[in-house]
Length: 621
Image (cartoon, rainbow, N blue to C red; front, top):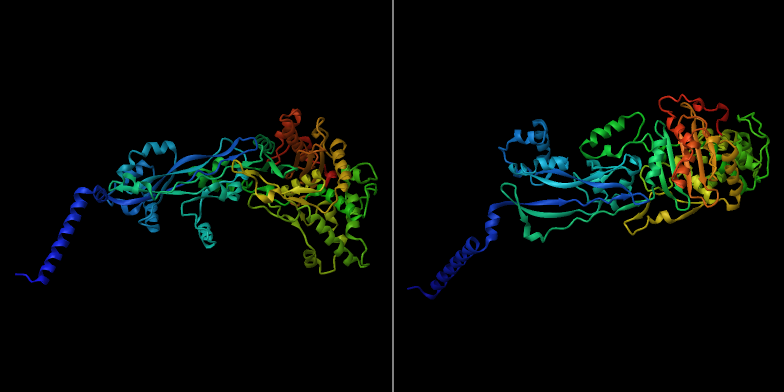
């Protein structure tokens, strides 16, 4: 017989055996989950991409929306070795070489993680293949969205989204941003880029049980580990889409820019960079091909001239020279000078001029004298030192208008333009070896000076406001009940006292009524204050420039227009700008002959109209 110790050992063995048998019985007979697990080979982690925020114009019209597309994803470890590759390639209209290349890349990335195999199938394409995809284990569909547009406008302003590059992904990870994965879409240009964080939303994830045939059998653990995607914030912009379309129409066959701003708020009403492109080109499966075509286009439609092109401002800059001189007390509004053309040329006008008339008729010699008085105030008795002191003061005044620095618009790629420091001239001429005669071309907006059209439009806002501005911006509301970013609510004051603006504004009014602006560009119903500019261009015909605001009192719109290689500012830029004013304020165009005339002007191919030759005597006016 067994002693007590042996009985204990036997009992333990029997107990263990019974426990194991009971567990096996439970797993095989009672608990169905283990049967289900046996019939399935994996869990599938599927990323759910959020809907990107919609972009609206100021009147609630949709500028950008979302269009569903479908990516074919592959999980290499689940792909059968003997799959019907020929049928698969035929189904998706790809070559065997493309199949091998993409599959090799997917396996290199990861055999156990899904990666895109065929991107952005349309609704129609998805409907055609969805019932047949079941025959190819390891392949499944991941819904995505791309951007959609019902119009061909605002391409440069809106920007575009695209698949994140490896370099960008590495850079973000180095900065501690781990949100993005390979294959994700990201805003690359324009508003899509600047407001990426607000627009993108937050992606979710779901875990699906998949059988050996690749068929989804439901959510793992009833979805307890799933997270829902959160859609991005909508953007409500200040753009008037109809005004934007009108501006783009006026700039057909012209290189340059139009910017319209509400001076009271800094809200951008329209921004045209011409030539432009249809934003529909940079979406869907044709993105890469279309992008390369746009990039190779010699007219550079992807280049945002409104923010990035520095132009000599020409005579519009005289307004700032006059304001600086008034603030410094080196002249008053009644001071007159004769139009002596021994240094710079001018065009016929009443002679001599006072300040108002100098703006009205854009007298070049007048501003040689104005600038000389700013620069040479005879503080030290040494000409070179006096120039240095005067230039430093002048630089501070001009900088207070936002010139020579980035204004901070809510778009990437803004350039600061050109406003040279004392150090620059020291390098060119040697310290204390330069004087007024080396920099006098700045007096009429030429020389070492470059303003983007955005800077020019901001100048018009400052003149309209009599001394201050709000940073130009597109988005007036983030989210349906939000506000703009805080920096766009901040008021910026120039160094010029408000009372000095009245003489300049009056001169701008008369420049339009009976001055350098072409008579056909004038409006009878709206009091427009404007200033023409004809900027010399060493590479060809002069650039036509015009800034304005309207009405004179309580202004509602400020405009800057630049048309490259088109001659006198009063003949080309001014008519375009005043048509924009009329469209915005009256929502109609009464000057149909002017409108049709400006549509026919072609400064890219060949302008054959009579006044397309410009007026050589009017340079810088």
